[in-house]
Image (cartoon, rainbow, N blue to C red):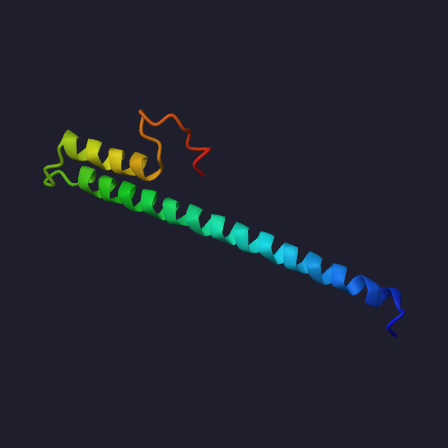
Length: 89
């Protein structure tokens, strides 16, 4: 059984599986980070929508600007930032 071609290929197969597992773990980390950003942006936009929809909320343009700044800052996409959102994704 030790001379079988399957036995000789086994270490290579195990190494390939380890490599695939590492790649999958890296992708999972990227997706987790992307969903965290998505959730942050959605929460901020929902709050803005609710406040802007409520006539009695007293929302000022400054409050709206600050919320937009928070979102852009979180995404490293403020106008004075030289990187693009795609590079920060």
